[in-house]
Length: 200
Image (cartoon, rainbow, N blue to C red):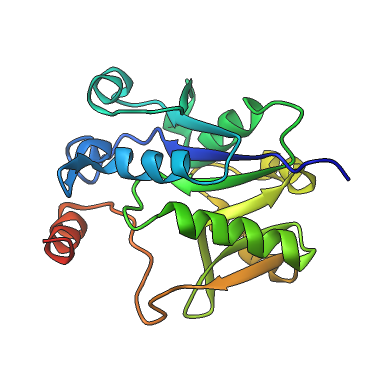
């Protein structure tokens, strides 16, 4: 078996309709929210990092440092997260055999967490790995190439959670560092204010 090539796919094309402003640019510890996730992915053991943009793309490009990550545009972003996932996966080269799917609004993602997820998937012999909070599987998630074909069946905002939870026997679960907490992704101003207090 050859060298494993892993890529990060960061989903950040949403319009933030519940937020009223591009949540990708909300400040966390002095940096835009999306930049926190991008930075973590660029520091992880990933050969390629892709950021999928859609809504507010030009404003995000001006304000976020992408490092070694490259940007892929999703013209169908209004049809939901599933279209961004497909756009990101479609942009990966043939040498990539697994992808870590990261939500652009998860500020507690770190490079070490992504590396641990990759390791969990590699050592388990299973085609996927995900974070486990309270017994439920959440992004970030590692998907080996053999799982990618099934992504075509996802519709709208039905994300990976539903697809992966339907086949938990295929997923290596990595327990969260704080098992009683919930994985934060930010959808409303209240979510952001709560997060800002945690990071204050």
